[in-house]
Image 1 (cartoon, rainbow, N blue to C red):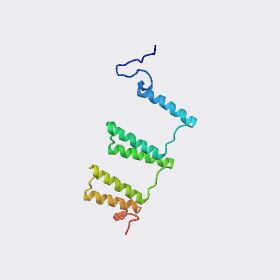
Image 2 (cartoon, helix red, strand yellow):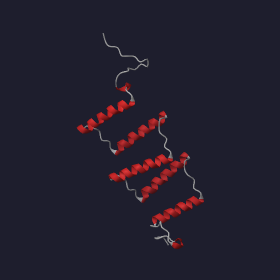
Image 3 (cartoon, one colour):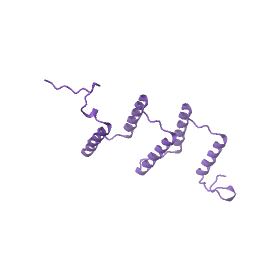
Image 4 (cartoon, helix red, strand yellow):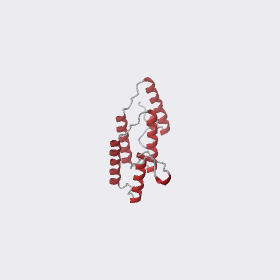
Length: 153
C-alpha cells in the first residue's frame, strides 16, 4: 500500500524543503552555493545577467507590493556605498563629461515625469551654479576680498 502524504489542511506536506522556515532554507541554499563554487560549477553572472535578474526581481516585487520603497536618503546612501566598493575594487565606471550630462538629463526627465523633481528657486539655482563654477575652477577657499583662487575671469 503506497504511503500517503501528511496533510496539514492546506493541501501541502509538512515535510521537505518548502515547509522549512525561511532562515533554514537560506542556510541550506548557502551551503549548496559554497559547495558549487568550491567545485567550480557555480554560475558566474555577467554584469548584464545580474542587472536583468535584478530588474526582473524588482518588477515582481513591485507587482506583488513587496518592493522596498527607498527614501531619497536611503537611495543616496546605497549609491554612495556601491560607488565606494566599485572604486576600491577598481570596477567603477569613470564617466566622461558627456556621459554625466546625459545621466543627469535622464534622471531629471524621469523625476519630472514622476512629479518628484525639486523645483529650484532663483536663489537656489544661483547658489548651485556658484558652487559648481567654483569647484570646476579649482576654487573652494575664498581669500580676503571675496576672490577665490583659480576663478575664471
